[in-house]
Image (cartoon, rainbow, N blue to C red):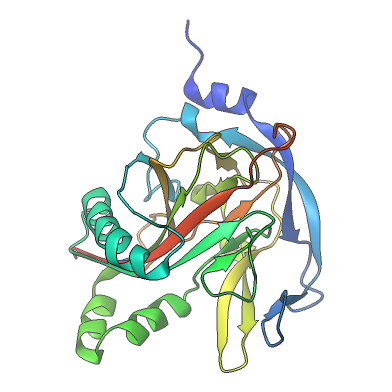
Length: 277
């Protein structure tokens, strides 16, 4: 008898450390107020977790687990040229998100290139992978993003209905052999695990969620991702009907990484999608 996919995924899991908030004795804050690497306040720690192979799981769902793995080739002449990415990649991504989610509209509003060992944290479009368990948007910051990007009447139409925020993650070069992306099954996330973390910039204050450690979290990754593959990650859903709303994720050091691998190079684009009410 064939082994169920969930059991195969658990057997094929890798053991790795993820960086979580250990406790709330110090309020978590990330300071981007000086040049160079950001300064992080908070009591963080490394916690061992099992990270299962999502390739062994069929039927992953944005509304259930909070993420999906897609085979979705795109044609982009230069991922390192921001203008080219906006001109060539954004329209393809908008069409993809509408097709994948059934959204009425999909607005791609920014992107980040991440390069292991070569990113620049002070850059707005090229940074190192993030090795902290986090979610990109909060209960307040997602609606605020809608209001920041759209005219008032249009923004209100989105907010009065249902909208989601997605991160679309794909390798620029593949296969990815180091610093892959781990994703937490949204069903294993409790409300109390979501901890508001302020982002302090010279001219504004933003916010994201960092994760308080919970041993019940269930983690997955897609080993050896290639450029034709993309992961959809739900960062926010305005619906409160039991669907996944937030999805923790983090880069991690894979113990199966071979010696002298090429650096991980990836692009993540953020998308707002308006759903049919």
